[in-house]
Image (cartoon, rainbow, N blue to C red; front, side, top):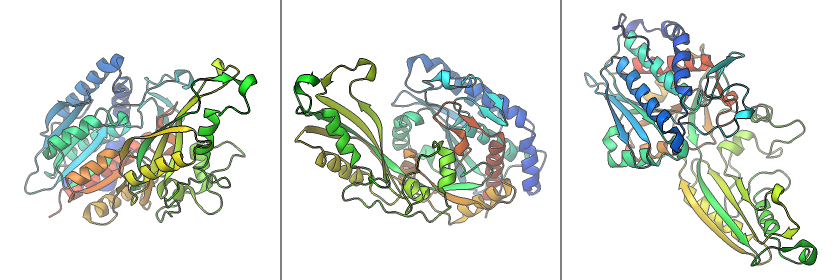
Length: 469
């Protein structure tokens, strides 16, 4: 993918923010071409018909690393979940520190191609944005890494050690990489770890993510009778399994504000970082006119998505509408997605949710509640040399705007795994995935200016961190 193999013609001292920004901006056409090649590959992990595309992506990325001509030794690992992880490493020189740069090349599926304005596998420029599946999450971050590394090479380098870690199953839980790094923790040993799979609070705003919610999946099945019965003959007295499950799930929301409530769990946290007002949130989330943002007058979206637990019904099984008959249902099931803020025990909260749902099932209906999966939250810091150098680099890359700190309602389990394996490493999170990207949705897109700014910030960080005594 890389188009620049020239030897360094400058020195790190000449790498002013303006010079780095100009160098990366001059690559915009190349960045589009690189991203287009990746977007064209349908790299959904775990699907048989995507295997060829996934292998092509690995081959393309390995070739691109080699083209950097920066002394990387690149290895691919076939991991336990069937995905391929790419680990490229170059050793530090002159006692320089090592930086790990993370991203992933797999994407979520495209189940609704008719909802896309343009082909999701053909990168398309429209209204100043680039559209395609994975354009932001996370292939836009992949090309930002390459742009930053080319800038580091161009401006003379500093001998900083670098590990480039590119995952192949993040969107399906990342179990393969999780197992790999626990078997070989030396692969991800670093002084600074850059998790580049988040995004800014808005386009053009330099942003560091300092916390991630953990989470859990909880399955609920309710049974009330041996079989469905005729709604004319039995309806009104027969215990409706769907109604029973709905009644229990309804207790997870405050009836006045819609805020999440779980018996025995503190759901009153406050976010003290960058604000997130209701108007901006409504626009970002596409809330329809006249529909309220949840939380009432006593909580902001920042409180609700970054500082409090949340429960979402992400699946519900009963009789489909098109198959409906006049019968009282005897069984119903749901899958709940729990999100837990930093500082809260994910396992304990999942257990509390399990107990809450079971407790509120009415009429003595039989309920089976199962915790399927749990991952802990992450809490980072804005203090220390890594955060300070990166924050300054971010600000300069985004036209000297102040760098803000936000939380993320999403989860990246790898982050906590790396923190446990290498507790002395500084971990930072950033990326190109601002709210307009609509990641995981139809018409996913990325701002090319955001790719350039993130690449500029990362290059400045590598040049400065690598030159520290």
